[in-house]
Image 1: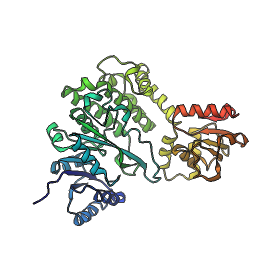
Image 2: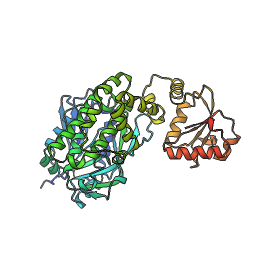
Image 3: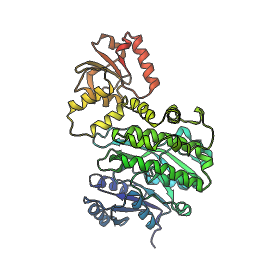
Image 4: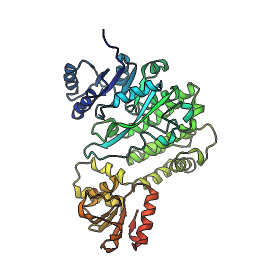
Amino acid sequence: METEIQLSVVMPIFNGVPFLKDSINDLLKQTYRNFELICVDDGSKDTSLDVIKYFAEQDSRIVVVSQTNNGAGYARNKGLSIAKGEFVLFLDCDDRYVPEFFEKMVQKAIDYSSDMVICDAGIFEEGTFLPIDNSWVLKLEYLPADSFSPEEVKSRLFNFTSGMPWNKLFRRSFILEENISFENIQYWNDTFFSFVLLTAAKRIAIVDEELVHYRTNRPGAITSVAKGQNIETGLGMMVSVKDELVRRKVYGKYWVSYVNFVMEKIIRLIRTTDENNYNMIVNSINAEYVDQFVLGELDDTAFLSEDYYKAYECLKRKGAETLIISIMAKTMRDAEWNYKKLFIAEHYTKQELARYVVEKMYPEITPGSDIVLCGMGNRGKRIYSSIQEYTNVVACVDKSGDESLGNIVVPYRDIAARKYDYVLITVDNIEVMKEIRNELVALGVNPEKIIW
């Protein structure tokens, strides 16, 4: 008698050859064995289809579907239409997965009778393999427990996780009952699906473990290409989600959370675009655009971040152009943003990149300056690797005792004995920056030589 499949895994694939083998191997090595892997090749121009056919010959759990290029949303819908499992996962073909991923997600859904299960995920950058901030993937501080109803988190429902589906397990019957599918658009096709189902779920459960390792900045990936259509589609997506929730008569419960989501996405769109698309933002994002999401009075207490509130007030009072200027001024000082924007441009030499990083982020620093870096976490190490071709890093200071950079790492108390032109604080948290600055001043460092 044929065993009933409990889990269907839908994987859209487009030009995934460099990463596909590792991803599929991760799935075939799962401790949980009762699943089908539906690989939907979305008109790949490389040999991705040949790769998945090869794996299908080796493992009968793999189902191969081939279609002309219609986008990831269409491919996911195609896979869902032939899925047989009680539960469904929608995964990307370039990510990595821990062996217990399926087992822990399915077991959580069974234990808590959940319509959705959401796990944490790590994020790494293609090429450098450096870890990237993953705090947006799962924000436990917004949640009351590891199992809850949407109403229990109504002011945070769209803010504790993203709309991306790759860390979410769904009960298939729940999707079918809600008659929801992925939007057939190139960008942002998953947020509509995930967010509408968040509001409809009876129970949502959490696995507080990084079971997925998400690869970002992959050349050719949807999120790596032109921004103009991305902006237009993103703004339209936010309206379509709102309209669907209004149609379902649930938007009134969740509108405050949704306004926070909208402001976060507007800030993100501005930060990740370039000057060629600023006019599109100015013409598209205005007070009227934001007002359509607001159902009542809003003050600073309604917003989850001071940045969201300030952006909202700036947009309402001064317009999108002023908002762009204020956000980009802050963004240009953000080390991680600059690092990612620059190092995907492979035609630059290291010295050219270093010069660009320093000139844009730290205009005070001149070529060959003697620099002390304070903070050698992920951000500090990225800045060190970025600027050492343009400046002379004479010392790195870190309280963790990290010895990976050798003798160049010294205790704080040794700064006074070093010859330097500037002391550069390289941590993410603003409060920690302030503490370090105060400590440096107490050690005799001239405040005018501290950059933070």
